[in-house]
Amino acid sequence: MYGGLDRVYVLHKWLGIIAVAAVLLHEAIDPEINGLEFGSRFDDLAEDVGELGYNGLLALVAITLTTIIPYHWWRASHKFMGAIFALAAFHAYFIEKSFSNSSPLGVYILTLSAFGVIAYFYTLVPARWMRRMTSYSVAEIERTGKAISVTLTPEEKGIQHHAGQFAFVGFDDPAHREVHPFTISKAPDSAGRLRFTIKSLGDGTKALSDNLKVGQKTQVSQAFGHFRYRETGQSQVWIAGGIGVTPFLAWADQLKADHAPVHLFVCCKTRDDVAHLDELRARAASDPDFHVHPCESLAGRRLTVGLMREHVPDLKHAVVSFCGGEAMRNSLRNDLFAAGLKRTHFRYEEFKLRSGLPLAFAWPFASALFRRFGYKSRPANCNQAS
Image (cartoon, rainbow, N blue to C red; front, side):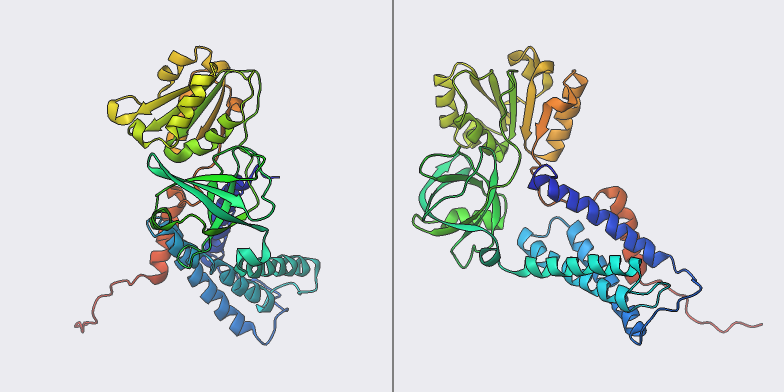
């Protein structure tokens, strides 16, 4: 409905921004409303609970804004957002107000609150208990570029997926039980095997790449994502930023013999950093319509529209697919649009599932945080002659 799970994360982020902005507004405005006749004996408690929830929300959003905090710490703290929502639901039900809980507005608010609290408790249940997780074992581990390639074989029946999709993977190891999303870097095969190519981007993935062993058990979720190859008959330009090459590895694996020309530009520091480069070169050697172009920044070869045009003269009529960092995506997208590429011909996957809030929102939030918890200096009391 929303265009894939990666887009749901973006929607979630912006709905969160709107909600927090509304909460800040709610706290800033203290209206005097006539006719507050619907309340309860817990009115004072509800007010205190609302205050506690507001302060907790400010603290949790401050942690979210601080993107240097390690992912696993942030993820643990973010689970408390549901507890803040539960406090807000209590506050809404028992606080004195101008409408009853049995009125249409009251029923509407309480129904949404109930669904929110139920959803929160659902997220607290370990994924392997409640959600569809399939058992696999590690069959092969290979170093490739600055990443490791992990091939999994199903214990029974494997998951169904399309080339370019990703799945959440949890390894049966006390140190790495937390599930992480990884792109499946090969197209489906008859044996149901999966391959994940993982780069050490943080403490969790680094420890994982250092300690994985053949035979280790894993749990894999269903496949997610709408970032799939579509044959349109037009020239294809694939742009990968670093480990963003993973969906294109799967796409290349399923190309048919009569496909339109494909040019894969891989942005890297050096070509030795590129995962599965030998595999891509072998594909290019056997397929005259598949071309691989490493763009090595240390050699002064950065990807630009001009460089793309050298290999794809009809660039403005091509279909461009991108997987990589947001800053790089925005820069290339603007340049491509200026060069005449149709907006509908630029496809991308949201590469970053966790991000901070925009500066336009962060500053007023920081101001509210300072007003809430800051200390104002006051002059000392002095006796002055009248």
